[in-house]
Image (cartoon, rainbow, N blue to C red; front, side, top):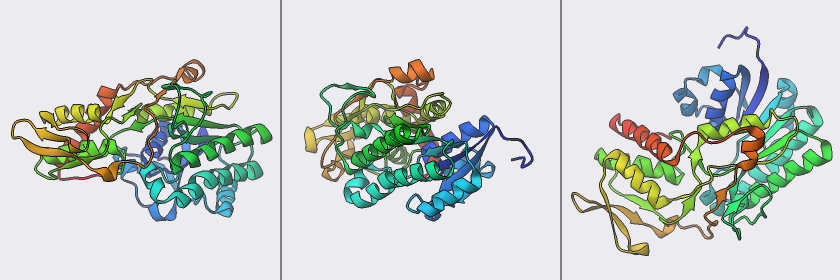
Length: 350
């Protein structure tokens, strides 16, 4: 990066080391932003996603902890950001059942501390908050929009809903330009291994290459509205370019089951898959050999599951002029091919 160049804007991205942080950083750099990557001290050096996108050297890294209000205020004062993208925090729904207090502290109160710091130090900063489709949870209608009632079904969803309402409150009380993106599931080859999509594509690739022998899954009929993370970070940026801040559902407007994801990924890596049995006794076999490669494991069932909801993205289409470019089939193929190449190279990422 040329240190003497003139930047268009300065942005802070919390959670820069994650999937969304990496793709967003790439997008902002392409738009000539000065990008400040904010990360907790424990993960500052965890930069494989940024390195994969060849941008690790173009980002200024700062230690930032949303649990520390003084730290937040000091960095905002030092950097003077035009935009802040709040992507950090505990991001696993399953983990939130195991660590509900930590999840709430980071996601809920972390967002509140950030809003308060901006309001006190630099209130003209525009804020993007990563909300989540998990705030809907249970719904009487399959299609949900910004106006649908909220009914979270996990500690993660509850924490995200607190943060979502905090953004609305600070927007209305203090006139902050603060927007929330209610993002439905978005995946990519940079997704972490603790998410079912990467678990599927990585394990199947390992099986094909003689590594891991079994893929253990929970409910195969769980359905999600899945999209590509690279498309969704573009929507984040578009929200902060609007004259008036608002909240937007970002989704693909269609759902697919875990079973459909598995079947397509298996086909991409060259596995002819057969199913036998029902429910907890169902198994997936490699058709040519009859070898079991997929099993159902009760440990991967959540205590409560959200409904299979579809995100209504018409507001984003109308106001942000945004819509997803990568289809579900293209997304699965992209991820499966990437993990197949990693397996052939002897790599297991993240």
